[in-house]
Image (cartoon, rainbow, N blue to C red; front, side, top):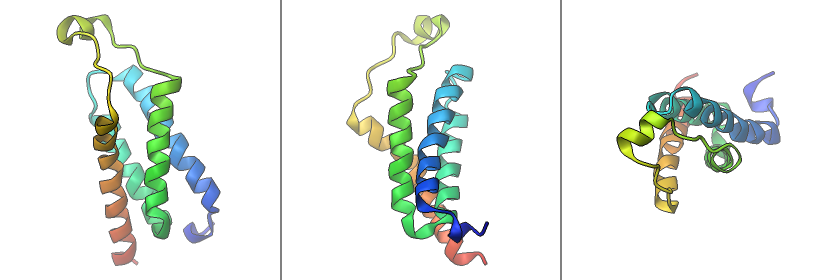
Amino acid sequence: MEPSKVPIWLVFAASILVPFAMMAIGFRLFYDSVIPEVAGLVLSGALFAYIRPRYAWLWVIGIGIGIVLSERVFPATPPAAHVARYGPPVKAGFTDFLKLCGFPTVGALLGFVSSKVLP
């Protein structure tokens, strides 16, 4: 199927499910290393914006929803070694959420630009 023929609702659902799974599974495997999750957020934003560049803003919103759902539905409990070293996790605020959404936004901008530049 051609990327421009993929239904918008399917891409939007994927933009929610991909970061949800990535954050829910990733923090259980690598709690102290956020590099895989950050890279995944940037790449998923770039991929969704490359597939349907006109709706890049919508994919960033979907990724944000996926992040919030993963934190609310399957909160990752820190390992005992992490708590002993750094203390208990601090409750993240709205500004922290906006900072986190900056990563898929940068990816979406890169995907949008590459969809216009690349054939």
